[in-house]
Length: 159
Image (cartoon, rainbow, N blue to C red; front, side, top):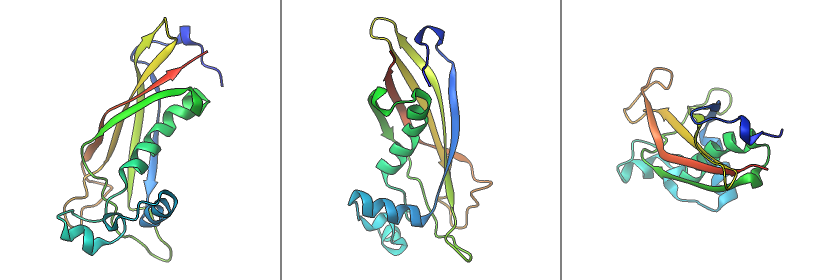
């Protein structure tokens, strides 16, 4: 998909996506990334360091969020800069029935925050939330949404 730079406007939405996460996702990410910190898989350890439960890796959250931008741009190489600040942890409770189930989800939406005509770049501002599962027994379906990343911005160079 080719995006025409001249057809874009500040404030234009690029889309929204929901990304479900389970403990199994965290274990797979830990193995792939080499980040084996027990706060990402061991509930007892996470609670011992004053976390409400196991939390998702920051880089997993950040990487999952930018996927919206790379899909929109049609080329991961078009993303020339990406940055964010982490504000709240993404709590991932243990949940399973006959199989491991997703126990939380990220909601990611993006809109164009700025256009640079000379550089032919677009700054995409992302809003990234997850349910507030910090209270014992919180229900992801009814929990308030927390911003887990702020100032999440990707710069995309278009042809």
